[in-house]
Amino acid sequence: MENKEPLSPHIQIYRWHISSLVSISHRITGIINIIAITIICFWASSLLLGENNYEAINSFLNSFIGKFIILGITWSFLFQILSEIRHLIMDLGYGFEIQTTKITGLIVIFGSIIFTVIFYLIGKNFIL
Amino acid sequence: MISATKKWIFLKISGAILIPLMLWFVLNLISIYDQQFIEVKSFFTTSLSKFLFSIFIINAYFFSALSISEVFEDYIQNDKIKNVANKLLFASAVVIPLITIILITRL
Image (cartoon, rainbow over all chains, first blue to last red; front, side):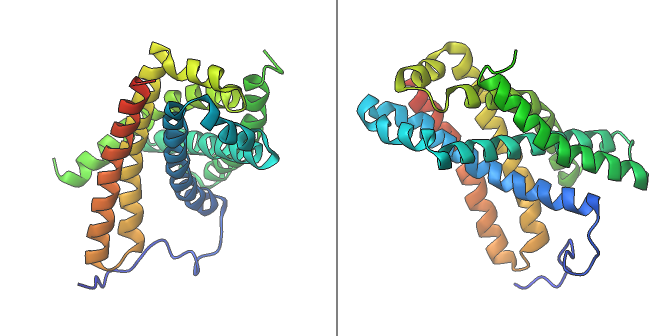
């Protein structure tokens, strides 16, 4: 049965704002994250196949593409975390002023990039 | 309490729980992803990692199933397709973490 209710959000009609960019990116990273977590589940399960079979996975993860994917997953996770914190603060009734939504939106966008670099450096023991 | 309110509360609680678990996992992922088999295996075989990873994937799938069903609500107009998509989504949110947890306990 076809539902006649309008679909949302009308991203083709409305002019782009920081808030709409963060909102649609939150949804996209949410879907990327669950695909990434599914791949991570397969990766963890693949350890049961033994050391010899893990060689191919290890070479892939050590390649440029492998590192790029890990960095991408890290950014996507961190974007989702910052965006979720923004949503939780908004659920408490704060940050609805237009200027504040722009600032918090920019914090989510640039903060996720900065934290990706910081987390990578911490994870690889370059700092701390 | 109507079901939409319950769904919203579950979404918010699981979202809040997911934040520290995701931070913990992403830091560990960066430090182990390019390591040898032994190091990766030792991470997944420690009791604490096993426990936190299990909670992480259960919560992540629960949260994702709830939030992706909202995306389906917004973008899929055909009710039949939407129902099938939701059923597949909730089934995979139960099956994938369950199988993964069973498998990592055998490591």
